[in-house]
Image (cartoon, rainbow, N blue to C red; front, side, top):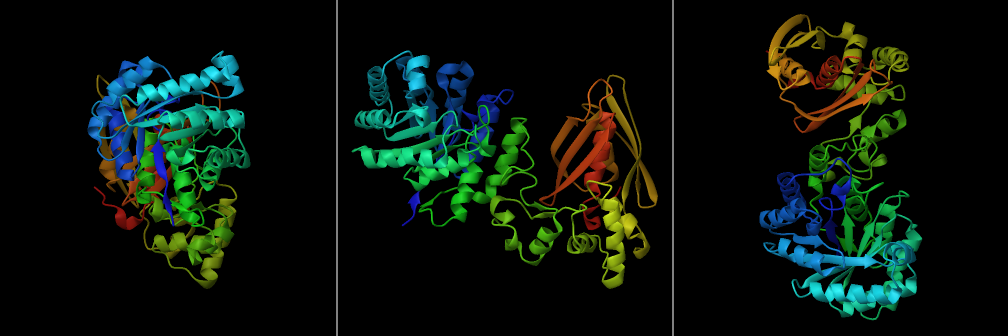
Length: 502
């Protein structure tokens, strides 16, 4: 029978330690509510003694959410534990997460202590925390490099002291899956009172093993996984929540289940990415923009015939509307026909063959084939073109930022002006006045392509229309113009029927 796997999310504690990703209290509450809707069991809301802001955030999150357990981190120090308990005052269900380093490295070099003293301090911390809350989790920091005999001994003693959860972190991301799974199996087999506590995993990704190690831990008896949205965290990050949840969902042989509402994974991922200003890498499993994108002709043909040929997850299961068939020089005839059908151009036989040959020649010289390219290829088969072309962009600042644009749609030119908080905002607003597809600009990235003051900026945009993503790309020395071009490029990929022109 399937057992429950507890999802402990530490996005707001361990994840927020990434430089430049700090959130204010209100933003943390927004994320916490999203995690509650996602079905997370435990939210590690912060490290209260670290700052007044963290203390306040733990308190306010405790007030804002009802279903998850709210957890506060502390060291094995009485003052830390007292402050954590105070921060949890309003939690419907509170947990104190306390612990200490257990590897020879931490004992000797960080704590300058002895194994016997470490056990004493760990036990004392758990007993002290039990005075404030019933639910106490003990973390054995750097367990991944600890001595197995010592780890078994300290875990046995902290469970005797009242620990309800024992966390076995691979703090430095050192372990291989077999090693980490072996730590968990060893505890299950050798600690006599292990049945009185839940074993938790907490794996870092320094060697790219975090998800694999976490799953290995679950396979060997761990029943809580400590994870973050998008796998964010110190250095190379933490275990990615979405990867573990979907790995377990895909592999029914693993005898556990979670309460995660997987259809909310993608929207939660985008929320965290946006608030923390930390883009998700394109090839990130489950939530990256290429996770369900296909550009190989063989793969495209297979997916169009039967999705399961190349997708083990239905995109809708994680909140992505549909797979993307991306046109490149590697694309096949099936993919080209798929995009032409979306444009309302139905070609078969010799006509399709000729257009495909022309397409391949064009694709060899371009990285990304857009709607403009397709319309040019099949123009003779169409009565008219609704292609959007950016003809002119100007902007000025006289106390207020103003922009004027001239946009050609098909054979007609339209002009519009708008103001904004900056030139990019003003230009994009003006474009939207001409073309009104009611899109949401979800992702906007600017990357430097060269070096120096005359650098070329590459702009990537992701817009959402009717819950479907569309991507735009452009490069230019003028960042404002590159942004406008990327926006128009994305708009051109939206089906014609979705547009309302001014």
